[in-house]
Image 1: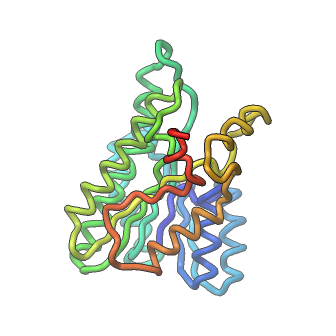
Image 2: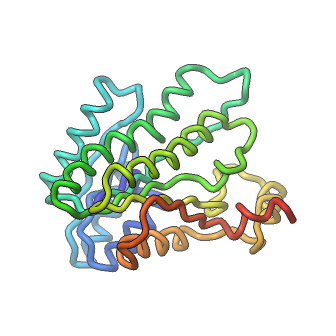
Image 3: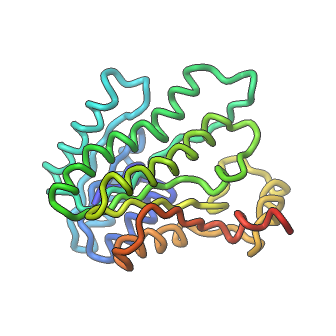
Length: 246
């Protein structure tokens, strides 16, 4: 199994949950090599295989992203063996107020959050289809259904990832299941103040933040719990996506 952006936050939690279920893992990182190596050592204590592999999928890295993604999947399979699960978790998030959005912001957010998952999924998914088995899980964002002002390129990238999930579910059927998990308020962004956190929780039905474990358990369900769900986007948001009419 391959998890992109696995070294920290939700990626780390998913990796530990899957290792606890006996999965052999390939952990992708961009800038977090130290954290990835520490997580690798922790995971190997479960008695499972764990490799790490760095790659920068942003436009600042030279060369075709399509080729980088294809080469990355090839290198991952050399280290771990043929992939049966790909989890597209790596993501960038930063404010881009309208009127101040630079083309480089657009390219970086759309490149990492949408273009890279597509080409990784193409490379891994076509191989899965030939072998008649496999699963792809995309981490999108519950806020994409009701976009937050000041983050347009990020929100657009996540809406695109939702559309990509449905497209790939159709293209890779009937043997590969492709789904998405849409987290709501799970981990507050760095620097979020208490009043803002209170406002965010108030917009959920459950009136609280979730935890990375909530996402990990949903991913485990899609991997282990069913082979009859595809093209779905599962909100893990404390009811936030349906609370707007309260």
